[in-house]
Image (cartoon, rainbow, N blue to C red; front, side, top):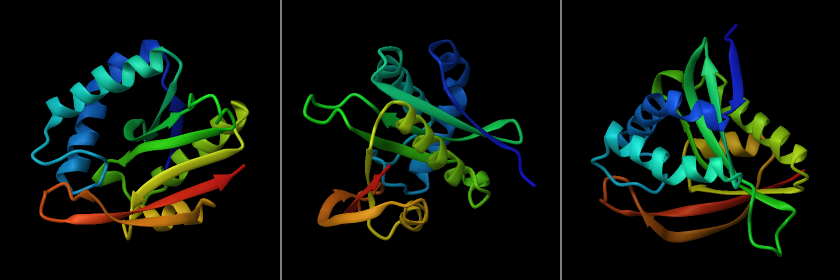
Length: 175
């Protein structure tokens, strides 16, 4: 049985996790994941993203950064954007779900999504939204976690290697 724990990283934990988060992101983007970045992408790029885009949002209380540890080693991460426009106080958004390649298919993604539900509910949210590349390996995981398809937009974004466009599927989950 695998030991998976998910923690919402506090401001004091962020710098200690920076190298591992950067490495997970670099492996994810290099593997072709559609999370908004283009190849080539290295650990320094991942560190820069977390340090300059994510950590300030976490410190300001506008975003939760959840980290999953598998057998004691950080193996995945997901962000929960909790502060949205004033007409959407009931909603939050899942962003940048990543699982290290060596930790995939071991329950890390399921554990992260379960923690998302717990934190969203605790924050008083009743709706979670996300988008994912249509046909991506994560799409069935989201469905299994209770997300429903709202719609598909063709030609939404470039693939990470820049060779083609892909569609994106918007999904939601009512809590």
